[in-house]
Length: 247
Image (cartoon, rainbow, N blue to C red; front, side, top):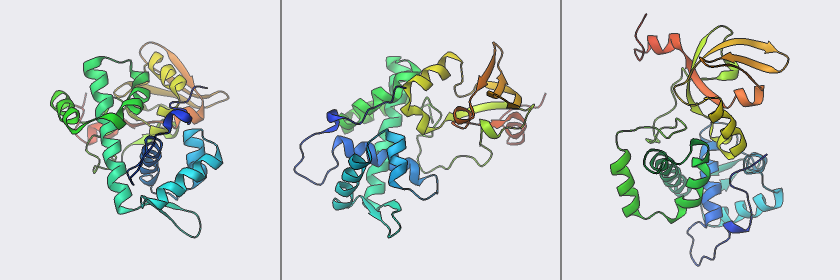
């Protein structure tokens, strides 16, 4: 399984300040995602998400704590400090903006956007950020469906595809950030057109091989662990919210 990006030596960079290194920026980004799940955040979650070795995760967390970006409770829960939250939010915004720019302007394939944005985010100047904003200002989400305005919570009507009722029409809104780490999975989603705004019919939720859904082109069977990484709404909820006309 291909992970993007890998946790290896290319994250190392010399620094003489308390600014986060490239690797530390990556950890702050993931910590921001985890903290916004409103669940306890533990080192083991970073190990899984980043496909990293536990000693490496422990080392990076110690460095982030020493620089004042995170704090840990006696139970081991990890939280972003005020400084850490501000830094992480800037990183997430730049990452999503860069994905949007690479998709709309440079036309990088959808499934490669996360990896390319991760490689480039740390070298963006404020001037480049402003230039990209001028070119994607009419769009309010990343190509994976995540809001560019980070203060906006996900609509309460959004549910995981794995929780969609059998027989319902399900409209994909976003792909979970954790799925973006797996380039092979993103490529599969792209081939199957499991992308934001795609409408599916949930045919069966009790199959031996997983969840069965129907698109206009094909019938797809998804493993439960993959279906839970796709978020959306049933069409009824979209009509009630006034975003779809009644027919």
